[in-house]
Length: 129
Image (cartoon, rainbow, N blue to C red):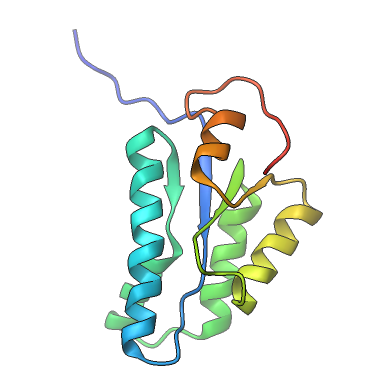
């Protein structure tokens, strides 16, 4: 008997500030985003972590618009958007939240609220917190 790998029931987009006023602030934003993405992954969600996109730029130049359109494409297919702490002033996060709200993707600002309203293994979906 083999253990067939199954897709996870819920796909969560992690949104949050990327750029900071300097490299130290940018790295802090990335750490917060990665930490939240990892927590969601460990809880059982499939996760889109946009802070990993920067690695493409290590191979070749990528236009900012291409990063943004790629992210929005993933967001359009997600079951929920989870906002990282300290991201309320990020223009990119505001755009992601606006898109999600306009397209019926529940938005959560608290990890526990996401888990309660939309368990990773499926079940009932309620409004975001």
